[in-house]
Amino acid sequence: MADIHHKFPVNASISKVFECISTPEGLDIWWGKSTKGIPKLNQIYQFDFGPGYLWEAKVSQFVENE
Image 1 (cartoon, rainbow, N blue to C red):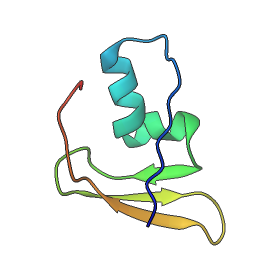
Image 2 (cartoon, one colour; image 1 turned 90 degrees about the vertical axis):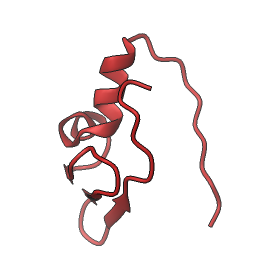
Image 3 (cartoon, rainbow, N blue to C red; image 1 turned 180 degrees about the vertical axis):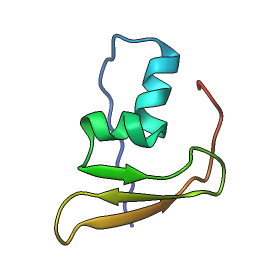
C-alpha cells in the first residue's frame, strides 16, 4: 500500500494541532462524519466517512504534543 503524506501550514499551538489529529472530537471537526477511539498506543480507532466507508486504524505511535 502506498503512503500518503500531506504538508500544509497551520497557525495553531502544538497542543491544539495534536488534539485535532489524535482525539475523536478533534478529528470530527475536520475529517469524516464520526470518529470513535481512545488516543493511546495500540488502541483501535473507527472512522465513519458515510455509507460504505467505515475505516479502522490502530494507533502505532503516540507521543503527546509531538
